[in-house]
Structures are given as C-alpha cells and as structure tokens.
Length: 454
Figure (cartoon, rainbow, N blue to C red):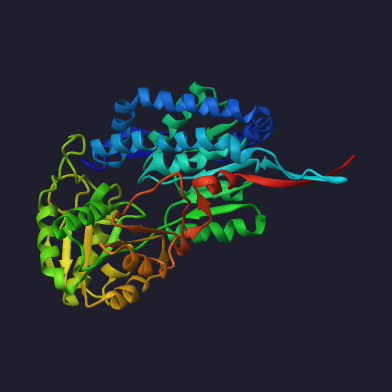
C-alpha cells in the first residue's frame, strides 16, 4: 500500500497490506490471548496504558512529524492533538477502576444481588485519519482497560500512525495478544466485518457506517458508529463582542482544514449584526497562513484526500449558480499538493449543497436570519445530529434553543470541542452509541447479574 504525502503528492512509504490469512491469524492470536489479558487486574492494565501515555509524551515531535507527513495536518495542530489526547488517559486514571468494579445491589436478606462487568472479548476498532489520536484513544484505550483484545485498523491515510500505536503499546507492556494492527484499504476492513468478532467500533462517514451496520447486524454483537455531521452555529444579536465571536467561529470552521466531524459547517447570524460579523469573519480567515504543513506557523495545510478537492469545487459552483456570493477563496491553487483556499460564501440558503451536505473541508456558508425561530428551523433542517452551537450573552435564551435541537452535543459560546468527561454521541445520520465519559468505559463491557444465596 502506497503512502502519499498530500502536501506534495510524493510517495513517502510503501507498507505491505494484510492478506486474509494475515488478518485471520492475528484475530486468532487475539482470541487465544484475550482471557489472559482479562485476568490481569484492572489496576495493572491501567498502569500499562499510563506508561503508553508517557512513551507518547516522550516522542511528541517524532509522532507529530509522522502524522503531518501522511495526513497533511499542520505540524502544530498535530502536536496539539497528540498532547490533547492524553486527557483520555487522565480520565481513565480517575474513573476506570470505579466504573469497571463489581457492584453490590442487594446486600441484605437471604439472596445477595450483584453485577460484574465482563469484557466483550475481541473487538474491532476501524478508525479514522482526521484525528487518529483522539478517535483512536476513544476506543482502543477504553477497550483495553476493560480487558478486551483489540484488532485496530487505522485508515489507509493514517497507517504509519497506527503502526506507531502498536509499537508503543507493545513497548509499554500491552501483550501482542491484546492489541494488533491490520493494514490496508476497505478490502481489509471487509475482512474484519466477515470475521468472528465480539464488537465493532467505527469512526468515519455515514455511508460507510451504514454499510457496516448492515453487515454486522446479523451477528447481534455490540456496534458503535461515530459518523459525520453538518454542525450549525447560530450567533444571536446580543453577543457583546461580535469580532471575537467571528474569530471563534472561524477557528471552529477551519481548524484542521475543516476536516472534523464536529467542525462548524454552517453559520446563521441574526440580521442586526450580520454585516459586522461577516466583515470580521473574512478578516480573520484572510489572516490564516496556508502552506507547508511542516511549518509550525501554517494554519491551513492540504486536504488529506485528493478527491475532496473536487467535492469542494462542486459545492462552490452549485452555490454560485444558485445565487451565493463568494467572499473569499473558492479555488484550488496551482502547484503540488491537495490544497484548497479557505472559502467563505454569503447569501446562501438551504437549496444549496453547501448548507445541506457534509463538506469536510475549509469552506463555510453564512446565512442571515431574522430571529431565533428561523435559526432553530434551519439548524434542525439536516439529516445529521452531532453538535450544534449558539453564541449569545443571554444563557437562558441560548439554552431554550439548544434544548430543542436533536443532537448529541451542544455548545454555548464555544464549539468544536470534545471532553472525556461527557459522552460523545450522535443522533440520526451522525451515529449510534456513545464513547467517552463513564458510558464510554461501560461501552466495552457486558453486565453479568449474580443472585447469591447462602
């Protein structure tokens, strides 16, 4: 399998893809070893994973270089991701033992009743390229601490990072029979779907997630899908600092080139501050440095996948044909690499693909609204349900709107953030199940009820 640098289009590595024989052999190793890993006390499993975190911290620059080289993520943002993902380990250190412990429900009377939490077994983690540390840690660290063995398939666009995970987990003390990588394209992913596994945890697009659901459903094993979004942000007219709201909204839309499931993908602004907001927003976007992702001052690097360039060009063209105004960007510059200029369109509406279909790139439409009722109607007009944000001074007014949105996460005066302390979940086409929080710990175990009579 060829690994291409999206900043240059150059071949940077060739990695052997796993054959079906390789995949089945690795799964068999995990199957035999999983009971041994489950027998290790949870405190010891946790200590090993914390050691993994220390090894990652000792190699941040090297690991960031690998991540940037294969995905095009700007180097400083790669460093930010790797350092930031450690909060999952902080969360597990504080909570894993508590939420995996046996619970006594009835201790009086003739019959004692209690619950134990047993690992699922051997689980598949089919992961994504856009934030491989964040979305990977959400699954494989939580699965491992719960006593599962994990077969990890990184995206073909982040395979070198996936192999680094394996290297450092093994070095930290995770047995080879508890964690393995399988490398390849969707063909290798299909092998996992056909294999005898005890759970499937996928992060990626709605289309692929829906396909995985149809394949896994007959197995009647746990499945979680963390899928895409078309996340809205509404700016109410009572914001005190319109410029700061515009700066924060722009970062939410364009960080990591907009290649985030929870990136701001459409913006609604109340008409009284609309012109002022747009002016500040464009000013901020013009300040973004686009270029070599290895330069720590770069904010906009290349897209990770070349075909996405055409997706964005098509959205721009569709919007312009339907009356949108192009305020900035809108093209792919000549030269090497999969670059797309940060793009801002106004005079947009929901007849345009830009405001309805996931963009997953540095492009945003800003729509004027008259009031909260119109904003709410437009924010709900989507097949996705991942996140939604409101910028406002009046918390009560903002909360009244946020409570009516069918999404898994809402933000007031912030956006595009994930915390291990609360669940990460989607509704509708944005996914199924929850990672993170205590629910994300319990996602990788199954309860067993005990009725014990002396």
